[in-house]
Length: 283
Ligand SMILES: Nc1ncnc2c1ncn2[C@@H]1O[C@H](COP(=O)(O)OP(=O)(O)OP(=O)(O)O)[C@@H](O)[C@H]1O
Ligand SMILES: O=P(O)(O)OC[C@H]1O[C@H](OP(=O)(O)OP(=O)(O)O)[C@H](O)[C@@H]1O
Image (cartoon, rainbow, N blue to C red; front, side, top):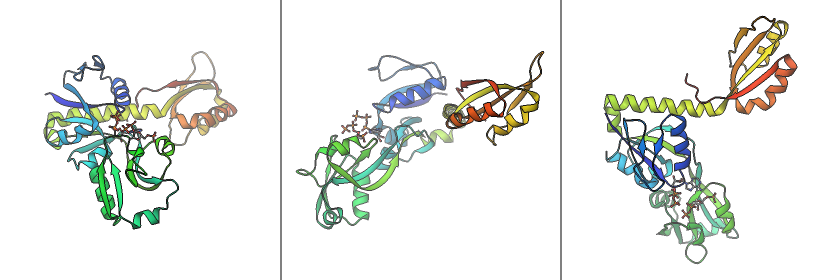
């Protein structure tokens, strides 16, 4: 069984490569080699521009891949989203020059510009906006005021909009990188099983990134206090210390909780507290 696996080149590649690496899927090859070798013999990898991936999967040319939700929706690609990785999050927004009045602009016939033809046309129609549409191929924010009135583009930090003196007047959707599959691949039991294993691995890496392992020692008479100071959802591992009174306590906790947790644990009687990274959490 061989799974044809497409990866997006461009800005999404870096976080995907790190995820694959953390999941034990190692790629080898130069940056310009679009068919990198892989240590998993079940995977045949090819790299494509992100926008080309959803339709090629939907046509059955490949089994699995990654793509932004925006380009899946733009192309109405019939793929199955197996996992939203949350990488490279963007908002698709409508914006106009910052000193223009939106109510006035949308009441007249306007020129809209975007790389997202279908998402834009659906939005303009839904809003009843009378418009002419220009398909952009990048640098969309520079069109107004001479070449267009309304920009529909993605925004991440908001810097490009701000630098081009545009203001957001509407949010059309949010998007981030999805792990997607061709529905036909999911109908094949061997392929489905491999794809589900990959989802589990990716989830375990993402879950591991949220957590750290805390280990600490405490006296027997403080054990209840220390355990109670740990987050309620966790059942810590408790072990007796060798040739000493006291216990070792071990629990995986959310990274976001650690800053407040450490002083609380210390006050509850914990000592020798160690914090170590977790690579994967698989339930
Ligand atoms: N500034 C951004 N921050 C995060 N994600 C983005 C950003 N711009 C685009 N993306 C996402 O990356 C995917 C590919 O978009 P796009 O083709 O614009 O980027 P790219 O792959 O870096 O290509 P290019 O280098 O030609 O702009 C889309 O799904 C999009 O939502
Ligand atoms: O909110 P920001 O952090 O500024 O990011 C948003 C910008 O990034 C992308 O452009 P890209 O760099 O891909 O160039 P492009 O205009 O050629 O698509 C996107 O098309 C926006 O223009």
